[in-house]
Image 1: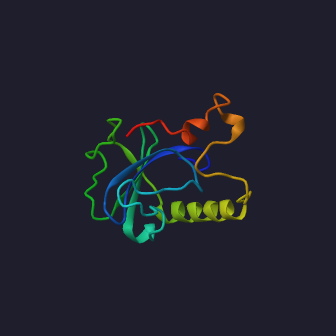
Image 2 (image 1 turned 90 degrees about the vertical axis):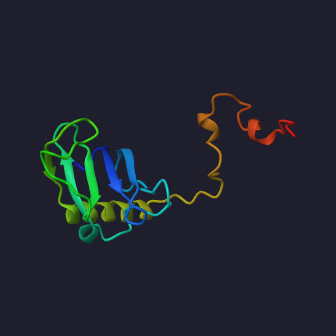
Length: 138
């Protein structure tokens, strides 16, 4: 697995334990739990998680250490049962470096609106009026 190219990441939340599937994950991308909204990468992954990569689909699995996992018996969502061990400490350090680089490159444009897409990417000129108009439902 090359962490510089997008990959699928299945990760158990260190807080609530929910399995989160992050498709096309890249280092520096946010990894937020779907249930408790915790930052999945904020934990000391080397001490709390075990790592595996599916030999069939290359999906990375970060499972809590207490989760039962047996190479050759445990099954990936693709059906594969053969896995390569993933060095969690190395993985976590690469993610931390990528996140640090992203924080340094943030463009704090004052006109950026987090709620609406940029005008250049709109399907029609009246797209934002959809959000401004009162639909009249009561």
